[in-house]
Length: 263
Image (tube, rainbow, N blue to C red):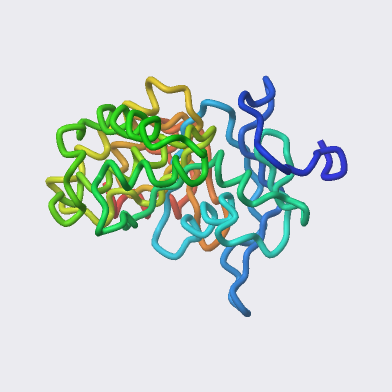
C-alpha cells in the first residue's frame, strides 16, 4: 500500500480495525532533534493482536519511536499508518489517533490531588462524554482488572509505585484503545514492585487480544510474553524475529554483547 492509497485518519477511529491490516506500519521513519538524528529510517510492522517488545541499550531510540507512534513527538520524515490509516498526513486528527492508542509511561503522570478512581474517570467524562456514574462504574471495573478496586478512594501519595503504575494502566485501558504502548513501565519501580506490574501486562497480552508494543529491559518478560522482539541499536532496528529465537540465538555480535550484559 502506498502513501497515496492509504487514507488519512480523521475523526473517530473505527471501532474494529480492518481484517488483515497491520496494526502499525512504519516506513523509513526518521526523527531528529536539531542536528542529532535519533531514528535513522525505521521500517517495521506490528500485526493486529501482536505483542512486540523493543529492546536495546539506553539511547538507542526505543522511547523516541513509541512517542512518534503516538504523535507525542511526530517523526521528522517517513510514513506511519495505524490500521491502514496514514497518521503522518498533515490533516490527521491528533485526538482521534491518541484516543485509540493508549500509552503508559515510566513515570505514572497521575493527578496527585485526585483519587485513583477519579484519575481514571476524569478522561472518560471529558473525552468520552460519559456521565459521572458511567465513568465511575467503568473506572471501578478497570481497577478491578488490575487488582486495585479496594484502593479506589486512595490518592497517588498513598499508593506504592507499583500500585500507581497499575492505576495508570487502568486509566489507559478505560479509554478502550486498539493499541497499547508501554514505555519502560517498570523502570522507575523498586525491584520488589516490578512483578505486580508485569503480571498485569502479561494478563493483558494473553487475554485481551489487544495490540501491544513495550519498551522493556525485562528480558524474561520479553521471552515469555512477546510474539516478536525488535533490537534497536543507534537509531536502527539491528535485529528482529520471534522472541525466543532472538533472545536465545542472537545473530549479530551487537545483540550478543547486549544480552550478555543484561541477562
